[in-house]
Every structure is written in structure tokens, then in C-alpha cells.
Length: 143
Length: 147
Image: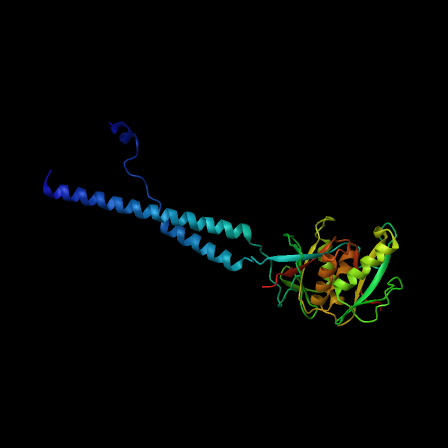
């Protein structure tokens, strides 16, 4: 073997080793990023944002909220939103009726802390009269 | 020695480019982290029938009715025998209620009705409900003020 070809094969070996080692490092990085992605996907809840601001009331150590499919937002001025769209209360009840809820399903209510309590009770009464199950008022933990 | 194995293995494996893959995964990660909500939410459940004046639970329940305003809770019904004239906190109201039902006999026949006045916001109502539930008030009803 000539001196040149010996050098060339040595260089090729070193390059192959370097490529393999950088790929292995990248694989470890991808593993970690996939794990992060799965963690975020499992932990997170995704709800459509209403077209108005909702500042949830602060909780005095209530029960932890579970994920529910039906979420209503109630703004400080009494405006309602469902699926990210503003909606009137009559249309909301009709829309909820169309969802064929089971008795234990319930509705999650994201209401602004400054909304009058009577507005919430009126809405709760309407939901109740439409036989739509229980209402879960969502609160946030004091930071 | 291992030349048989070496012959069976493909001499050159097709390489999958990893950089575009990790680019996409990073973009997905950033998207989900921005779109996701990881807030620690709590819940207060309004049970079916709890806001209706028409539906009466079984067995017939005697309601101790309180009104809620910014100052606190004040008894409304005649069954509140305390003669409390000033508004009290939710915890004191719960103590009063529990003492009364203990004195009256069977606790299963009693319920606590709360009527928030106009001008009371949801935060005040939820604070009171949270305190009442913590103090051991079991059957709680939330009613709109009478028209």
C-alpha cells in the first residue's frame, strides 16, 4: 500500500468516526426533545380562547379541576363565548342542547371574577332548566 | 473471524438526515408550549337543582336562608334563631348553621341557602362558598334574589 493510500484510508476512518459520533449526539438530543414534547402534550389542556378577557376568581383551596369537553366563557360585562365565538345566552343553550350531554358530563364555566354573582346564577339556572347537568365554576390558585 | 457477519451486513447504510427532523420537532415543541395551558385550576361545582327555587330535594329540606352582600352574610329566614343583626363572615355563618341544625335534630333535613344581593361579584360568592364548604356545610343552594 502506498503512503498516500494509507493516509487516505486513515482520514476516511477518522471522518466516519466523527460522523457517527455527531449523529449519536444528535439522537440523544432528539430523544430528549421528543420526551419534552410528549410531556407538554400530556400535561397541557387546550381550550379555545374567548374574544374577551377572563380573569378567573381566586380559589380558597377548592377541588382540582378535571378536563371537560364543554367550556363556556363569561366576561366581566356578562358577554358569553363558546368555542371561541361570542354567543347569546339563548343560542348558547340551544348549542349545548345539541351536544347531547350525559347527566354526569357537566359544563365548565370560565367566568370573570368581577362578573355579578346574579349573572352567573341566572346562567346556571338556564343551564339547569335545560337539563344540561352540573356546572363547574373554574378558579385559579393564588400565586 | 467476523468476516461472515461483515459480509451479511450491508456495506453502506443509507443515512437519514437528522437535522430537518429535529428542526420540525423543535418547532412542534415551541408551538405546543405556547398554545398549551398548564395552569393549576380549581373547581367549585354547582350541583343540578342547586340554583332552582322549583326543584325540592328529597327528603323535604328546611332551608336556612342567608343573604350575601359586600359586608358578609346575614340570616334571612325565621329558622335562623341567632338574632344576628350584623353581617358575619362565611365561617361564622357556617358555625351558626351547624350549631342550629345540631340543636334541631336530624342534620339530613337541613340545607343552607345563599342569596347574593345585586352588586356582589363572583369572587365574593366563590370565597363564601369555599369557606362554607370547608366549614362542613353539605347541602348548599345558591339562589337569585327574588324579583
